Image (cartoon, rainbow, N blue to C red; front, top):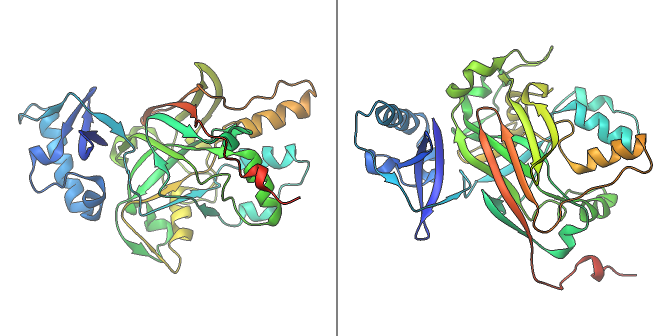
Length: 332
């Protein structure tokens, strides 16, 4: 099942996406809420009801309301929190090699994550950025999960049952802001908190079973061989697979939930797939060729992320008409 959030006349709704069409769930079953947050709080019972409606629509067993005039928004427009992991060894190794530092053993000992701004979640469409963000503006190609059940102190062996679904994530990054502030060993903060893009829909785990593979040796949890691609202005710049994750989402959830509650509506990203951002691509290119043409996102660029089974997330980058710069307000 593919769950979507969308707007009609500025009101948010919850629907299912079936063969290019969106159907409102609440209109088919009045016990289903008309927004994603309330739906996720209902847990497995509401998920089962929604799956039943989804099947009835597919079998033409009910007359469902098809939406015609709508704006597709982030599947989870108002997450209870947003964390991002660091699960792909290929990306971490490349980033450290490009900085001429050794790989650290801690990567293989435990998964890590950071909190980002859950109030800066965006979906398909235009992404407005401030002028300072365009000082080395970057994409990051990732997968994300959404938590569907409350839990605490969850073992990795049980953690997959807490996942409501999967979606594409673009962890937007303003690299100059990020690199400046992280010299102080705190962050990432302003380099990351302006936009995290998710979408286009939330795909339930059962739909991904045909792509399931074994996790990497020594790891626990579901793993899927989903091709991940990013195109900028129609040109492919990044490619990888979700199967390349070293740490599984189950293991990341185990760490997230240690001593704290995870809640329905929490979003957790995988971290960047290998080759999945300009920072890595530029660093590798310059390491091999000092004349490598460095690239960053520009005003008007289109970003298209496609992941097998999860759809295509389309965005256009726009620069805010502003002369406000926090980079220029640094003390001498």
